[in-house]
Image (cartoon, rainbow, N blue to C red; front, side, top):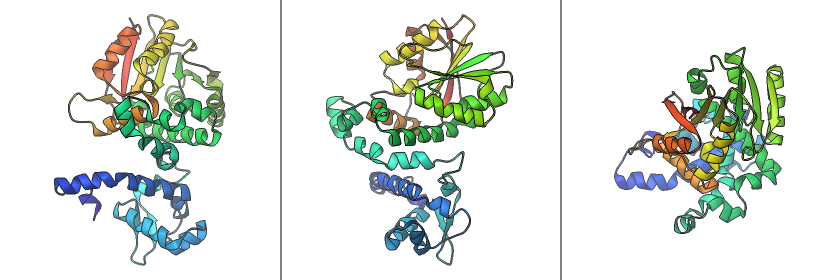
Length: 341
C-alpha cells in the first residue's frame, strides 16, 4: 500500500481500518529514532544488515521496519536495496535543531502508550489516564524520574521549534523593554525573540532544573547577559516585566488552575502591559483535526484541554484581561494577545 492510499483514500472501511493501525506507525518511527538510524544514514546509504551490525540489532526485523517506513516515505530505498534519508527522516537526526527526534521517542515510549491504554476507563469515569496508570500527575512524575524529564524537556523543545519561525514572524515586541517567558522550557522561543529584537531583555521563568538548562543554552548563544533566570512556581508568583509570553502553558491546565497563573501575571502588570499566549485555537466547526487530536492528548496526560477563541475570551475575562486579538500564523499555534482589563 503506497502512502497516498493510507488514511486519506479508499473506501470508508479501508480508511477506518487504516486509522486503527496508526499507533503502529508511531511505534516504528519512535523505534528508529531511538536506534539512531537517521544518524547512521547521514553520510551514506546502508543496507539493513549493515545497520543491524552497527547498532547490534536483529537484521531481518530491522529490514521489515525499514521497508515499512519506506512505504510511508520516512526513508528511501535505492535500487541496490540500501536505505537512505528522506526529508522526513532528516527530521529524526538527533542533532537537527528543527527536528523531531525526541518527540518521536517520547510518543512511542511507555509514557506515551501506557496512558492511551486507559482511555476507555477515562471516558467512563472522567479520571485522567496518566494519573490512573502512574498514580501521579505528569509533572510530579517527571520530578521523580530524571531521565524521563530530560526526554520530555527535549521533546518540548522539538515542539517549540515546529512553531518557532511562524511565531517569531508574527509576534511584535516593539517598544517592550523586558519580556517574561513563563514556562520558558529550555529558552528556545525567548532566544529567538532576543535575536530579532537586539534591545529586548528577557526573563526565563520556569522550574529550577529547567531554568538551569536554559541558562546554559542562552549563555552558549551569547544571550545570557540580556536575561535573568528565575526559578518560579507560577501558581504562587511570577516576576515583574513589561510583557509576558506563555507558549503551550495554559493548555496544560484546567480553567481553575489556568486562571491562577493568569491572575498572578495580571498582578504584576501595568495598564500598558501585554500578554501573549501561544497556543492552538480550536475551530468551532469540523476542521482542525490536528488541534483536536492535541486536545485529546491534554485529556489523556494532564486533565486539561485546548480551547476555542470564545473559551479563551471567557478565561481571560475571568482572570482580569481583555482579549485584544488572535493572530493567525503559518505555524500550528496562534498568538492570543491580551491586555489588562
